[in-house]
Amino acid sequence: MHKHNIISSIFGVALAFLLTGLTVFAFTAPTTSPPAGNVPAPLNTGPQSQTKQGGLIINGELQTNNFCLGGVCRPNWNPL
Image (cartoon, rainbow, N blue to C red; front, side, top):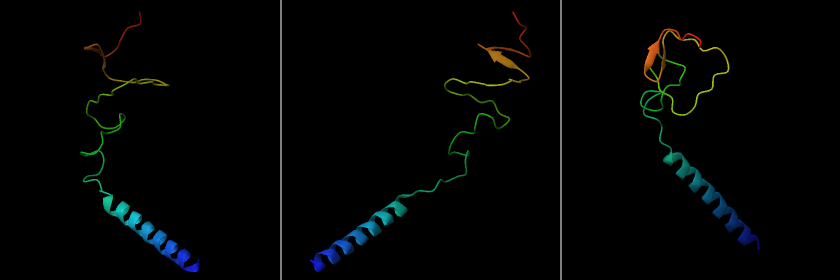
């Protein structure tokens, strides 16, 4: 019975090393730092125009120099 425990332990340790090695060698590091070619910049950064897919909820004041709605851009929108 003692020999069976030793063999099981050796097999378990070998399997752990194998799985750890596969995990380490399967990892591929990103080629560039974000957001250059990796992920898009967050919506709140950068001077360039940005598009967001999906809804946008703003819990606070929205400030802008030019507001575009349906292709019509104005510096201000008068209340109705």
